[in-house]
Amino acid sequence: MEVPVDIAANLARVRAEVRDATLAAGRPDGSVRLIAVSKLQPVDALRAALSAGQVDFGENYAQELRDKADQLGPMPRWHFIGALQRNKAKYVVGRAELVHDVDSLALAEELGKRALPRAIGVLLGVNVGREPQKSGILPEALLDLAHAVHAVPGVALRGLMCIPPAEGDPAPHFAALAELAARGRADGLPLDELSMGMSHDYPVAIRHGATLVRVGTAIFGARPTRAP
Image 1 (tube, helix red, strand yellow):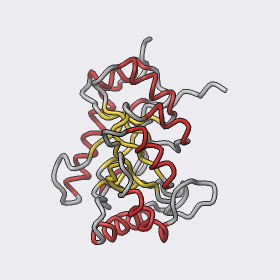
Image 2 (tube, rainbow, N blue to C red):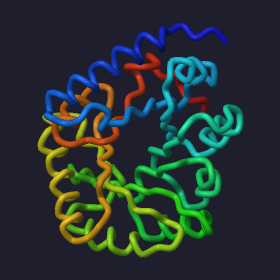
Image 3 (tube, rainbow, N blue to C red):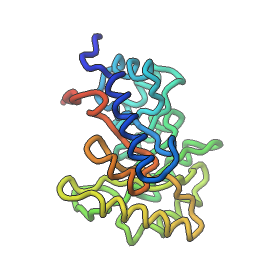
Image 4 (cartoon, rainbow, N blue to C red):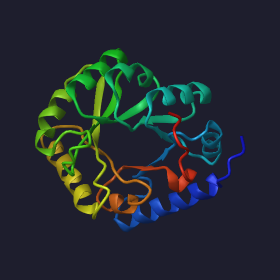
């Protein structure tokens, strides 16, 4: 399949912007990892990104991640970045390095049970904007859940993630997530990773401490429509 977008050029531009934002924030070059959000994109688009040196890819649908991982082999480093149902954890474990939106102890336990004797990395999804239509743990409940997840066999707690409200300035929400992570680290929790920032706001997220940014349309162009 011909890929109509110059993915290599887009990647080069996004990488340069990530680097510039990282250095402008006074942080070391390379301290922010770029995740190419490839949900609904054809496998040929991912191959083009791989050829341009991209390693980390993010998928929102468990079966789609399974199918793409099985087609592309061991080279991509997969991230599951959507809301994950417990009965679909089997498609993600053994393929994804990191699950970005764990918001319940039950989901963490399901992932850990399937990952043993190894461990799967998880980030806790935080509903920083307190939006009723979104998943994610509320900020005041985060530390209790983080301690519980940290104790689950087969799970490696790595950090936090958020998607701020679509309207308004995302900066206060990114700052709030960074503050929650700092409080957790002071409490002995391994919350070094911050997954925040997408195509329209990742420079702001980097300024507030993002270590993982999730960029889709700026790399691949418009996302195809999902079949009903």
